[in-house]
Image 1 (cartoon, rainbow over the protein chains, first blue to last red):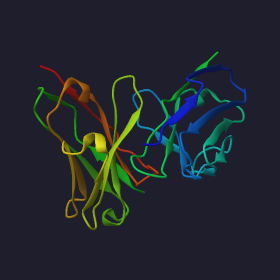
Image 2 (image 1 turned 60 degrees about the vertical axis):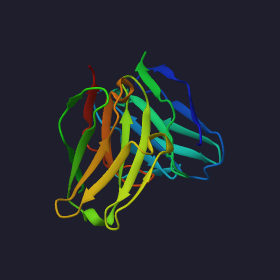
Image 3 (image 1 turned 90 degrees about the vertical axis):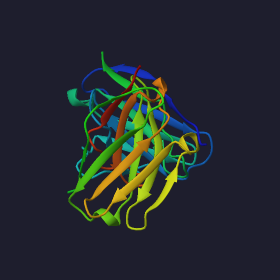
Length: 107
Length: 116
């Protein structure tokens, strides 16, 4: 199985900050990497697919980059509604594994 | 716009089985894949398997092989996930989602509690 490792596990930031979450795969997944946001008690929501493609309806302050084994999710200017958990997930091969998550909290 | 609505919460005894449903509306049910992902309390996300309803082909994570069965009823546009030999470690929220790899949208989730 491909292992996905996110960092940091938690992050404190303020409204308006620029933040970056990284994700590393244990082997190359090409660009088959997706990012999700999850709020408490809710299902995950797809933000980014194919490493850098913005899902329809997702604000443009979210962006993704990377290929191979190293990826990043950047939020250019944090809004109050962005404080949530974030997960990367590889869709290169089954089982489709997720990172352990990053908790983004208000400073 | 595809919407997925799941069945309600379940409480099960160890050793028993649970069957969770996922009803799809909008889109063409047979043309897309339905996957199942679970999340234990306070934990991350774990892919369990998927079905392609139009041909009924399934694929399961090795971890769940032999314990999970995913089916789909095209006439009612409903997918099902059946998990057997439950233990306390199966206590989790179970989600269905459209897609095989890229998951969108998701159902609202079904909490399955395994307790004696």
